[in-house]
Length: 208
Ligand code: DX5
Ligand code: ZN
Image 1 (tube, rainbow, N blue to C red):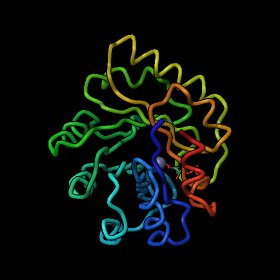
Image 2 (image 1 turned 90 degrees about the vertical axis):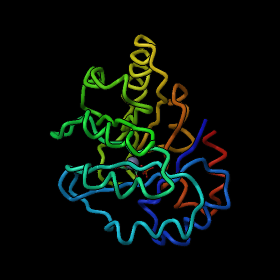
Image 3 (image 1 turned 180 degrees about the vertical axis):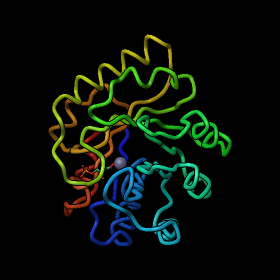
Image 4 (image 1 turned 60 degrees about the vertical axis):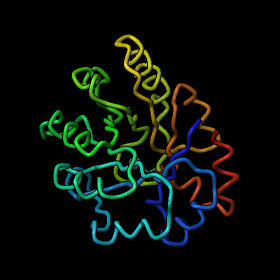
């Protein structure tokens, strides 16, 4: 299992990112919130881009914003492997996915806990990752929604039935117990479980 570490709940991102750089974590999960798609707001790009000073890990960027087209060109400049947008957006999703691809970056599509998995169908040929939200997006430290286990299986079945090689990532409430319900995933994203601990590597190893 690959692990992506979110530093959304970190009290000191510079210190925690430096510590994460010394682990074998696969990706740094960068949560971006605009105060519109979700109520919370994260720091502006002018500050967020300094992340390169503290990590040489590839970035897994999760855009929880109403207007991804404003953000995609900015985050495409960084050491980014995936940029993920939400299937619930009012925006033209295909245009956003094409914009991500135009930078040779892998495109992800995220789905909130109450959105029908079938909403993903029109975009399946164009995506490299499905990010299954196992909490309502907007904040770290929430409890894993139990139904997510079934939803992950549903997404896996959908990808198989359309013969789509996209990976599945799960985000929200992941810890040493809840990860057991995510065995169908290729990547797990964990925030508070890692950054609120005193041994990042132990927690990361427990998720693999
Ligand atoms: C929630 C974010 C998650 C969050 C995960 O909106 O997308 O990435 O930071 O944090 P934990 O692991 O604490 O739920
Ligand atoms: Zn996230």
